[in-house]
Length: 102
Image 1 (cartoon, rainbow, N blue to C red):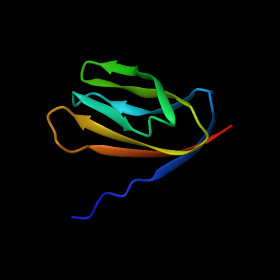
Image 2: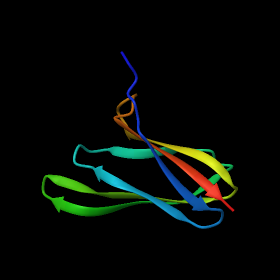
Image 3: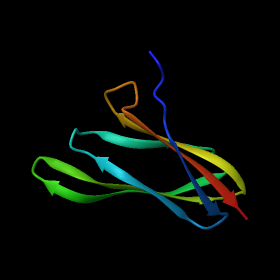
């Protein structure tokens, strides 16, 4: 089985200045959580919030907001995986390439 190809989103940030990555999340299925993997010597995670935009009896969806700050100049890849507690593999993948400048 071929590996799923993930598009990489490119962005820039400045050392010491917080930046956000926001994307749609649907909690309707229950238990799904986006988990980031990144070089902790280059980035610090400042926040991981969920902002509900719809909450109708059968739907719970909104925006997932991650806030990071770069601690040194360079390029860093942030890989996000949508994981369920009861599954061994990720449901979805997002990839960001962040260029951090002085």
